[in-house]
Amino acid sequence: MMAVQLLRAGTKRVTLIERAGAAGRGLAFGAADPIHLLNVRAGNMSAWPNRPGHFAEWLGERGDAASFAARRDFGAYVEEQLAAAEAEGPGRLERVRDNAVDLVGHGGGVTVVLADGGAVEADAAVLAIGNLPPPPPGRQLAALPPGLWVADPWAGDVAAGLSDDDNVLVIGTGLTMVDVVALLEERGFKGPILALSRRGLIPQAHADGGHPEKRLDAPGTRASSLLRDIRARGEEIGWRHAVDQLRPFTQTLWKSASDAERRRFLRHLRPWWDIHRHRIAQRVSTRIQAMIDRGQLRVEAGKIASVEAQGACAAVTWRARGGDQVERIEVARIINCTGPEADLPRSPEPLLKALFERGAIRPGPIGLGIDVDDEMRVRNATGEPDPRLYAVGPITRGLLWEIVAVPDIRGQVAEVAARLAS
Image 1: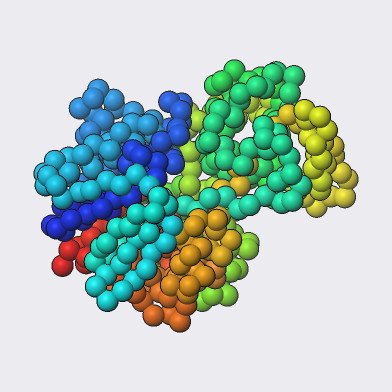
Image 2: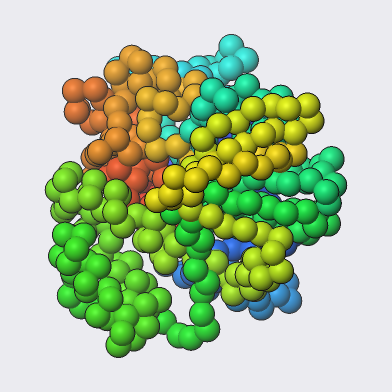
């Protein structure tokens, strides 16, 4: 969408570098199964800030009026927006299928170095790389043979080779766990699944109902006062509406909070924020709950104590949160559903590693993502913004926090496109 907005804003030429080949679907929509639904209602998923109902209209033209559309459909929708913008200005968009491994600024602009040895010259560049890959596993998990340990749940069929007599361990209980568990069941797997995370919390479901009334006053930035505020409002209008009313204020609240307040929020409230703010479709929630009710899915709060390969299985011991007793389970597969990495220095991405080691970029506030200024210009190691290098999307969450959903990202890319085009 960054490329689309640049083309629409009148930029003379746009080069879109995408290592996956087809542009528009990304990770969330490219690897999705037909059963995977969007976590946001179609009415809020438009790619255009000034046309919030555009995606819902697009669906309606194809005879689909679902409140929560399939993710594959949204991927097709974004692809179509790119193709339409490309057709409006033939020759202005160049698609490059490769991996960017370095980026060097110079007086006339930037040079992007590609994995195949080529290079792309430009006046400016935008990092629109989405979420960083999950954190690297511990030594014990990394030593497991392929098939036992699945580091990337989207890299292949997570159910391949499993029988109903097998046990599966899922690390993480958030949105990725929901997707993976539903996919295992869809593929016919009937064996037991243990989902383990530090707090054992799973995403809440959306509920039927209209939009909440617009909130006029912003709450305070202290985590304790914010929690009291939401609880009080939740008793009056329901917690879902109380949380949704915060959306226009969240980025401002985060930016105005001190680092100490941000860390306190991340340490104490983030797990509950995530499951209440980033909800799932009721149909998906019902499916997951049914798996829990019949005993196939077990969700626990705890942490792994040890992992050891034993033939075709892995022996795992884990300890429940707040307890001393250790449980042991033999599993045929361990699936990583911990979510994206937030710590820039730990990222394995070649481009980010090269930029970070050279001091061209630095971690964002309290170590989240990449540091940018209010215009989304990337800051170097000394804090100076680079007028030739921008960043958009989840990697800017250190500054904005709430920048992982389409309604937030579409506004951000439109603003950056307007600045670059002018």
